[in-house]
Length: 153
Image (cartoon, rainbow, N blue to C red; front, side, top):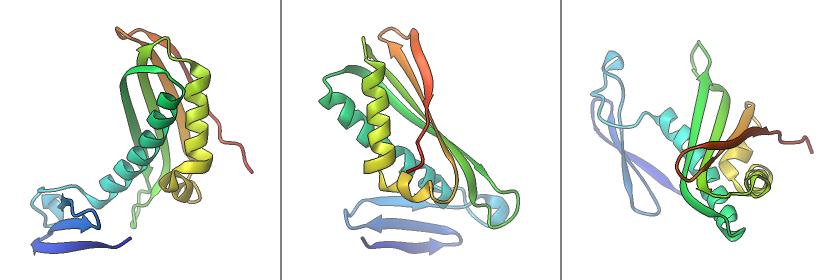
């Protein structure tokens, strides 16, 4: 894969890759930016969320679960000193639907974590990633929640 960022002045850039889509990159004004785009580390968190989100929803749908809403949230903690690398992350899978099977959700999370999501596979070698899930009945009532523990291979 090839990617490129093109400078737009100060600390403003436009990033693109092979798909041709563009994303604005920027920095906070206290470091000389114009607050006009994503921070690069935000994109790393979004990449992690997007990678596993696509896997999990695809697998859940193949298991014929009636999903009516779906959201994946990533929370990261960063080191206090520079370089402020991520030191840990929590991924939360929020699945809403009609009688969604917990075992189907757990299996989808497992397959993403151990076999399909390259972002998660790569980043989990650097810092711990907790995997939590929340299943809601259509209408908003929480049915079950829990945590998936990736076993050491």
